[in-house]
Length: 294
Image (cartoon, rainbow, N blue to C red; front, side, top):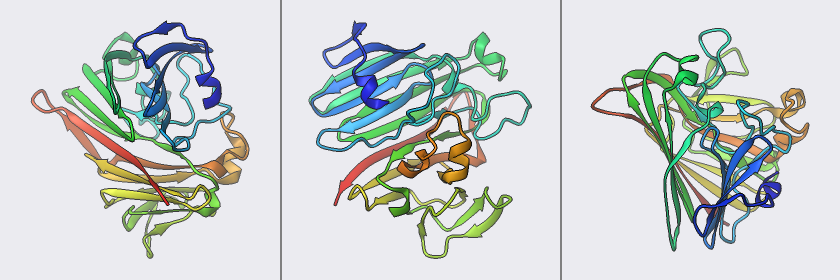
């Protein structure tokens, strides 16, 4: 899917390294810079691909995901806001509406090291169908040798949120994640609380854990691709480690049956603690990603 995105015809050349293209129903922005390649959809301000120079693709994107108006994309970095997980009210979308609505490219610049893009989502008639509050939400991406992401929400409200990052791995059976913390809520085991005794999370089957006292930096150890990915979390209460395993993967229409084998989600999250935005102080959530070669 990522290869297909970079082969799309150019509809608009915004800068020497930034172009607008179209994938089915969705506008796609493609970055082709000497230091980094990347792609976004305007829907959701959704980062689909990030590939620093001389590195393999860092993010995972499902080959089966539709590029349709209002349909969430499976893979990349979905922005889950203003709630994480199932909605409290029946009929509302899981993980909020921000990932399903079109955003505006508000600012962009580039230099020798990479590019910076800022996207904006404002309250509208479309958002008020799901949530009554007035807001302005920014998503800033600084892309080069590292990937720096920050959400900034302005208004007066309480939210939960996540940067639901799908990382490309060689083989989930050979993946270990450290730096998650110890106590977690096990959503595969009736949301019971448990402890990670040895500090290393593996993925022998379906895994969905909300870590309660997460460390500031998680490291994905990928033996098959012979690399590690360092994920630094900021302004978060939790980190989530997720992989659907074989049975759930087969049941998901927007994922290949064996899709679970080549990704792991390590997410910067506010799930168990709400964030408050006020007129004086916006709420934030941030994640920085760096590839460590072995």
